Image 1 (tube, rainbow, N blue to C red):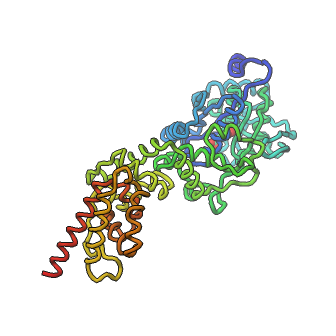
Image 2 (image 1 turned 180 degrees about the vertical axis):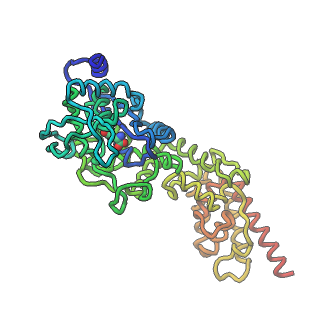
Length: 470
Ligand code: GLU
């Protein structure tokens, strides 16, 4: 039975084996970028060798494994667009693990022994350690040798039905035909035990690549309290999956050139596992944001506009006030907006802080805010806005863009004072102390809205004037 399972998984004993890697997460919590970085490297390594990438959920710790975490792994890999060729759940493989345990016991390579005294004194299955040196060549860390004597006859199962982690991993890697084990450096000390078990069950030793740990900014282990967020957190915060993927690929690897922005096909071409560094890689949120912005800038314009439009339209402010968030308007705002954001989440922040209001609704403000600095009253505001309105009314639609509007108004502003002319215009269009310049605003708002807002400002001035001088 065992040999039939083996032949099935290994595709027989023919020639050079196809590269098969796996991502083997334990669903005992939300996985972070440090965990998914392993999936990214495993995936890329398999694909650049025309191989297979397997997902194996290591859920044998029944007490700590939760469906919710498993679901999150599926969702995250889907979001990152890292499709697996096969998926297994370790807990469903208990009968297979049992067969291998029975075989080892029958061959006297394992035996039922006592649990250590401090573990309660029950029965466990122990591995008969041949006490020897094991050697392997790690693709990242080079030659590694361990003397296994210190390990003693280590436990491989609590019972026939409960193999411990090392045993299940080795049997599964063997039967799934895993040729390359790419995993975190924290597993390096598990490797000698696992190699002894491989030898005992007649499995070849796969090639190992132990990746440097991903550390928080203070070089502590990345953890919930230290900057570690789930992958779906980044999804929900409006990051691009391609940016996360790109950033994670740079955690411990670089191409040796200045290039930092990659898409997946580029990564599959450029990645070189032998160039992975040995030292820990720091997870840097700022850098991630920068990578995300670079990816945003490279998106096809229509996709960018649609995504920004969705973000704005779904905001409670847009819905409460009933903004008309049209593709055309957002298309005009997008270039300005992209300068101000790193992620789509930043758009939500701009909306909430009412920083985008003037694009979607007429501003409400006090007439006196239109005054430039030391102006005593609204006389100059009225004069300049009237003149600017006249200029803009005459400006042909074909010239209604940022440059055309600027060219039309600039000589007048230069002659009369930039502040005196441009401040009231900008304020009439935005109703805010801070906003893009009036040419940009007018171009985005379009001719009818721009003229209407100038009219409103002039109306406000007249009323304020009437109140001031009855
Ligand atoms: N299930 C292990 C973990 O989540 C990984 C085992 C392995 O990669 O060998 O850390």
